[in-house]
Amino acid sequence: MFTIRDVITEALARSSLVSRRQPAPGNMVESAYRLLLGIASDYSKHNLLQFLRREVDLTETVIQEDQYILGNGYVEGVDFWFTETGVTPPFPSAGAWDRARAWNKDCEVWTMTNIGPGVAEWQCTTYPSQKAAMAHLNGAVERIVPGGLQPIMRIGEIDNDLPNDWIQVHADNVESIKEVYWDCSQNEYANTAVPVQFVSYEDFNNGAYGDYVYTCQEISDTKIEIRFKPRFIAMARSGRLIAVYNVKYEFNLDSVMRIPDVYKELFIAALTYALACEFPRLSPEHTERLKTTMRDIENSIKTPTRANKFVTREPVVGNSLCTPEQLLSGSFLYPR
Image 1 (cartoon, rainbow, N blue to C red):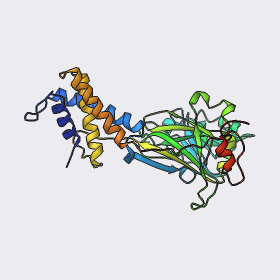
Image 2: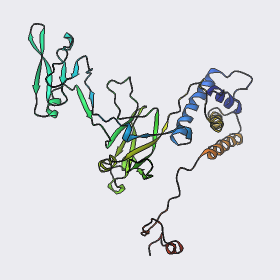
Image 3: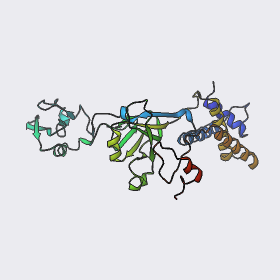
Image 4: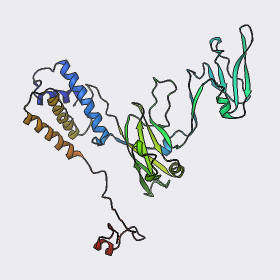
C-alpha cells in the first residue's frame, strides 16, 4: 500500500530535508502536501495524468427539461410554488404572506391578498405573456434555463452550499475540458465523429474561425461553462456531441495511490524537485539533476494525442487522397 504520506516522506529524504529514519516535522509535511496539491493540479490540466481522462456524451447527459432557477431568496415550498392552471397553491405561513408567489410557468401568477385583519387568500392574475408574468413574480424566478443542447451550457456538479445552484450537464470532479467531438450520426459504429476546434474565449466571436468551434470558461471550482455557435448547435442536435475532460486528482495525506507505478515515481520526482527549490539544501548541480530526472519521467509517460495532420493547398481527388503526381511534385503543399 503506497500513500500520499509515503510520497512526501520519500521526497523529503531525496531532497535532504528529513532523514528517512526520523519522522518529518509537521510544518515540512504541510509544505510538501501543499506543493503536491499544486503539482497534481498542474499535471491534470496539462493532460499528463492519463488515468484521469473521462468523456461525457453531452447529447445524452444534458437535462432535457427546462429549469426554473429561483432568486431573491425564494425557496420552493416555503414562499414560492409552481402550480397547475386552475389549482390553488398551498397556503403559506403567515410570515410569508407579503412575498408569497405561485406561478404556472406561463401567464398565471398567484399572490396573497389581505381580505381582513390577519386573513389572506390567494389571488390569480393572468398576464398577456410569460415575460409579463415573470415581471410580477417579485424576482422569484431568476432565469429559465432551456433544456437540451444549447449554445451555452454549464458542465459539472451542483454546489449544495449555493442556493438554487444549477447545471445542464453532470460531470463528476471536472477539472478542464480538453476535446469535443461531433458525431453527425446516431450510429455508434459509423465512425463519423469529427473534432470541434477549441478557440480562446476572446476569439470565440471572431467569425473567421467559422462555426465548428467551442470555448470554455471556468466559472467555479465545480463547474465549467462551454460555448458553441448557435448554428453549430442546430446541426449538432441531430447527432452526438462528446466532450473529453480531465477530472481533479483529489487526495489527503493518507490517501492510497491506486495508480500505475510510473505515476507514483513521477509525483516523487516532481515533489523532490519542488522541495529542493523551496528549501534549498542541495547544490545547484544536484537540483538541476533532479529537474532533469523529473523531465525524463514526464516525457516517458507522455503519449501522442494527435495523428499527423495532412495539409494540402490544392483540391484532392474524390477519395480524399492525393494523386501520385501531386505527391511527387509537392503541389499538394504549394499552389501551382
